[in-house]
Each structure stands twice: as C-alpha cells, then as structure tokens.
Image 1 (cartoon, rainbow, N blue to C red):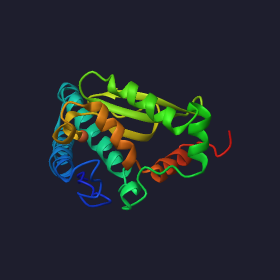
Image 2: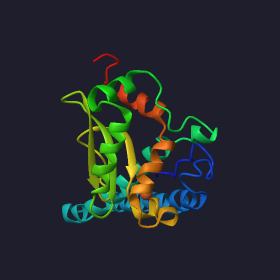
Image 3: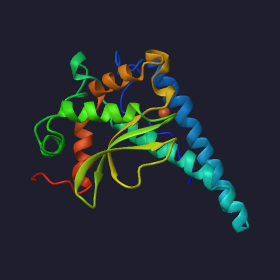
Image 4: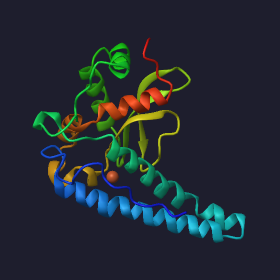
Length: 204
Ligand SMILES: [Fe+2]
C-alpha cells in the first residue's frame, strides 16, 4: 500500500512566530511529500526487482526516503501551537511522568534543553536531534542521527529536524536561534504519551 503525506495536526501558520508559515508549507508540502513519493517509488522498484543485486541497489533509497517519511511524520506531531501566544499547549511541560523523568535525568527542563541544543548544534551537515528512551537502561538520553537516518537505538520521544530546510528561511545561518525557539512549540503531551508507550515509568 502506498504511503501518503499525513495532514498536519494544526494550520501552517499555527507555530508562528517560532516557525513561519512559509517554512511549514514548504517543509510539509514539498520536502515531506518528496520523501513519500520517492519511498513509494523505491518500494515499487523493490517489489519488481528480480535479483538480490537489484534489491541491494535500492537499500540506500529505501533508508533515506523511508527515514525521511518516518522522521517528518514524528516531527509534525511533536510540535504544537505555542502556549506563549495563547494558541495551544506548545512549550508546556506539565507535572507528570515525563517531567519527573527529565528532572531526574537532567536536573531540570532547562538543563535538558541546553544539553540537547549543544549536542544537536554539533551535528555536521544535516541530521536530527533526539530525546530518546533507551529501553536497555530505561533512561532518557540525547542522541543524534545523520541525514534522514531514523532513530533505531532508542524510542524517539522528541525529534528535532536539523536540516537547513527546517529553519534557514527564518533563522538563516543561526541554528542556535532555531534550536532556542523550537522549545516554545514542542508538544510535551505527545512526548509524554510516547514516553509511557515506550515503557517509561511514572516512578523512578
Ligand atoms: Fe525536514
């Protein structure tokens, strides 16, 4: 079955002033759609391939475009209209299991976001920054992936797109300002849902 572009759970201008309408429209309608189209094409070619060599030749396209589709589908859901503008719940970490886990692991939300931004700003080229749940240690960790590689070592709790297409039209080359702004539109309710589904505990 062909993959389809998921609808955004909010309007294109809903994340303003932190993420502009122009970025959101291009990012969703053009960039994400391109990953979806290319993934469908690669899967169709894979299904039609008759030799191992032909299938091996498609691995890179499957990983890149499949990862792009997975990562962006997560990304849209892990943002929400900003509470600071009276538009929604973006940026608000309420009392609960995720807040307890973040404070236990990092000391505070500010410490976590500061560490996240420092590690993520260090990505060379394009990639993703993640707050991930390590199922082996049952702890939250900050990790990065290159290109469109999906996060496989951890369960993704929050993912941030560090490709220039995610911020350049508004923040130009100042990645640090984008990383600072993004926390005002992070949907921590969605993050907590993922944390609990991943097996994160309410008690530590
Ligand atoms: Fe992107």
